[in-house]
Length: 166
Image (cartoon, rainbow, N blue to C red; front, side, top):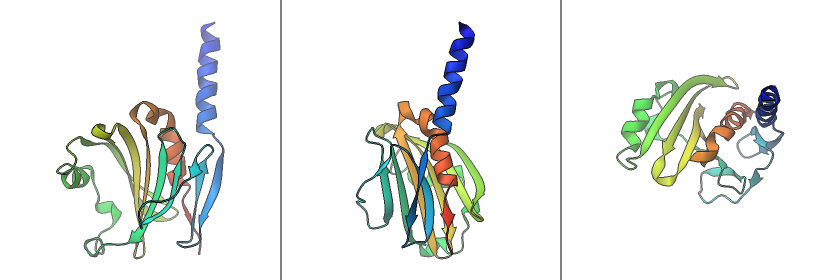
């Protein structure tokens, strides 16, 4: 009986990890990204939000695309760190806490990913920063704290699926 439960749990985890995705294209900024099944596009409320998706249960994916700020022009995302974000954000949100960071390449570009909580809002997020030329891309994925672990691998695969077209 114990084996049955272990197999059932593993099957559910694998089903979640290999959830269906659909590619979405931004003609304005020449990129594509795979959005998980169950997430629907919703209207963007900010001028720099290119695409926004919600699962209707409190989880979301936002693609913010904007010109790089003058103070970012000499920076690479490889300069980013846990301390950089905590020092910049904690004065405005004292409950902000970076849980993990990672530096990697996404479609040939340097990227910085961090997982953080903002407990006063009841959310946990995975956010990716990437510069391509004079454009800054920020992909924010978030869920209520009690649902994040279930979505974390899906969010990571979504971020890693970012592809630029020529």
